[in-house]
Image (tube, rainbow, N blue to C red; front, side):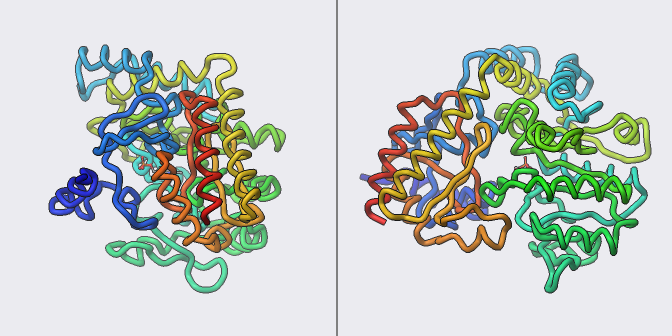
Length: 431
Ligand SMILES: *Cc1c(COP(=O)(O)O)cnc(C)c1O
């Protein structure tokens, strides 16, 4: 039988660098041929060979209702009939802003954009404009999109300014980005002691999904908040992945339930809020947001920003999420998946642990959940890759890299979870 995925991959590679339009899709980390998606429905997608997969990526997070949810489809079809893009304001942009401000309590105003990268980059420009300062703090293993100033890893030695992680980023562009170890209180204290007066913002993934699944500890998050406040820096929550994914109040709602009065100063959103369409946002307090053009001196713009079809998709998605019991059911199913995988691995004598919040999960081939990027990277990569391909052959699609989180949607049934765990039991027995 000819493998149509392989045929398409070869054809793609002649025209598109690496055959893909975003690197992780190329399966470089796990080896093998990427699956070219033909169509998707509910919890499943079908590849170019008509093979069905249970989809635990859901477009890397946005598809929290599964694929082709009827209410979302109807909203998108209606919006498309009314016009694709106007470059002039629409009522749906206000409605979406109203929903976001209502759901995420720290937001007083938002600006809509088209990607998480754009939102994160704009949030940093705004933080710098608002504080008149240059330096930003980020953490190793957190991803905030591919803006130049954020493509940076820690330099040698502790708490140093970073080195670019990509060719084409001049060292000068990252010289004001301080890269610290996640969950490392000592480095955090030292960085503020030395540079506090120059720090415009601290940007963090509160539950870091770009190193699989690592939570900021409560003491660490508490100190991030205190030090930002003491030094006049803005605390920026990158909730592109966690926003409306881990709960209705997002990760900040979770931390507010653990740390009385907790709030970030600014929030970056994407993925779920667009329901699968190119839509993202950044927002915060009125006084800061009003520094944006056309009111203020911080420039920011976009031809397709607040696109009418994307806002219709996002709004319809957000409305479904607010139905009673939505997150309780999603969390329960996600927990069942992680517990089932853990039990199956332990049954085969394989070190394994996992964690989840709402509809986001991660698992590791190790005994204890890692607290930072260096620990995540000690995962047994060869074993993960064998597991990955074993699951893929059995029609289960996880993220094709061990440092990426997974996602369960409301379309995943108990039977899907059980089938996944049963497949894992077979694969673990062979590892
Ligand atoms: C996906 C992601 C981004 C980038 O969003 P894009 O829409 O891919 O540009 C930024 N931050 C986090 C935490 C993300 O998960």
